[in-house]
Length: 124
Image (cartoon, rainbow, N blue to C red; front, side, top):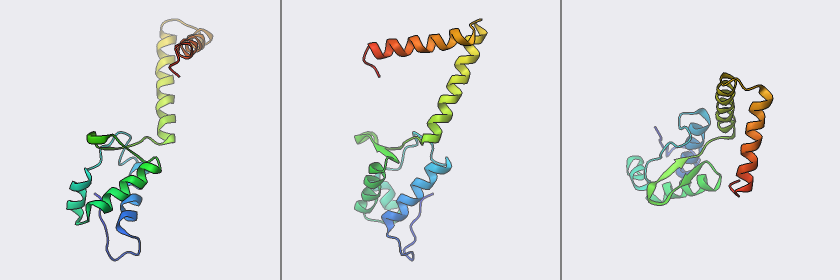
């Protein structure tokens, strides 16, 4: 739960930024977590909507959140989280490929072919 302490030297928008960034880093707010709309959070915390909007804008500039227009603001994934997800996907693929009777070399060859096809299609 986000909160603002008026007794702190840090302005309210900085307190919000720090709390949201910390919740992302700890996993409390995982990638894709939808943040409360600006007006709703402002009302809950007794702040001006511009204060919350400033925190969200600065978090977006820092890459901590992503705003998708009327759909809302969402927490982005961390580098560590993306690496963990990629490792899990690789283990899953390897288990499946080996289960199909492919050798490690054949499984890696399939990944290389998929990457070449993707590159040739201009998708990345």
